[in-house]
Amino acid sequence: MRPEIENLPASKIRDVANAALGRADVLAFWFGESDEVTPEPIRQAAAESLARGETFYAHNLGLPSLREAVAGYVSALHGPVSVDRIAITASGVTALMLAFQALIGAGDEVVAVTPVWPNLTAQPVVLGAQVRRLPLQPQRDGSWRLDLDALMAAVTPKTRVLLINAPNNPTGWTLTRDEQRAILAHCRKTGTWILSDEVYERLFYADGGVAPSFLDVADASDRVVVAQSFSKSFLMTGWRLGWLVMPDGMSEHMGKLIEFASSCSPVFVQRAAEVALAHADRLVPPLRQHLLACRDRLIGGLQALPGVTASSPPGGMYAFFRIEGQNDSMALAQRLVAEHGLGLAPGVAFGPEGEGWLRWCFASRDLSRLEVGLDRLRQAVLPG
Image (cartoon, rainbow, N blue to C red; front, side, top):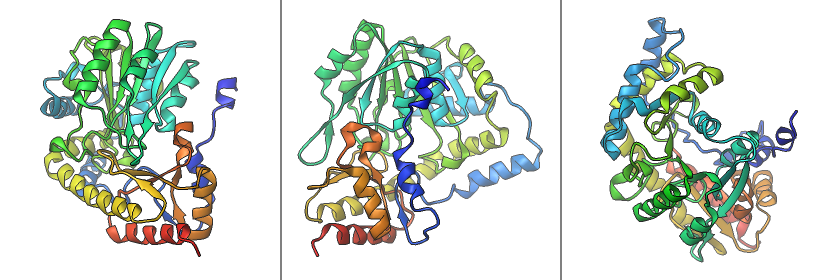
């Protein structure tokens, strides 16, 4: 094995979860998915596709009909995006890996805004690149803020890619439109590519429910690649389907990369995605409203606990909070599982900036499940 691979750290979230295998009493909030199944029309579309025998290879870039549907969906949210800028990928994380493969090589520099889902900073390392972390700044109320001046100083002409995930996993932090404009203008000067992970853009609790996107401010010729996924907004985590929006002229080469990675995405999954997009206006707003209720109930419960600092995230599906005097998030997460049956993700899983914090996925079908989780946390933090 290459040293870069041997030295990759294992998932700390998985480490906590594996300790609870076989325990039916554990309430698991550690993974980034809802406990609600994919909506029936989407599942039915996949079943009908299989019944028709659509079990063969498809175009590397995706079914033309799905690419057209994605282009229409994106254009409705962010302005005109042509279909030749769209590539369908076998999951959102695959979209990100393909983008990195297209843009960086061994020795290149990637600046990543952190804390962030660990896969995003591991992928450049797998490819032999160097990752520089640009930490968000935690505030007294538990919210997080970007030091824009620090980012500008970190991104130089030798920076090949700037990686940003906003709305952010785990903090919920979201870029403003003005910040995006400033970052784009700076990266134009330095020649830096922007890789923007926007998979939580529809799980945004202000401004009509759509987070600011780099697609709102960038031209089709800009060095901006946006990665997206069907997982979060359409409750399709297990389906493994995503897409990329790329600059003009890039899709032909991306098709070659997809051929060498997965060849194509399964047709029946793509048929399900077509139905998901066709029903987006009916499916996504109620999901967002439900998650907003989940967020507010959980954050309110956390803020009522002594010694707990938590802020309402503007986007995403996570509460990222800390407990006074608890600075070892891994040990705390392990204790919560072992002694209280409460499964949360340790903040250190998202990088050193997250140490001392915990992530709680509040995407729960039943608010009472969150209530039981809060009771278990209350037992853990209250003296006696």
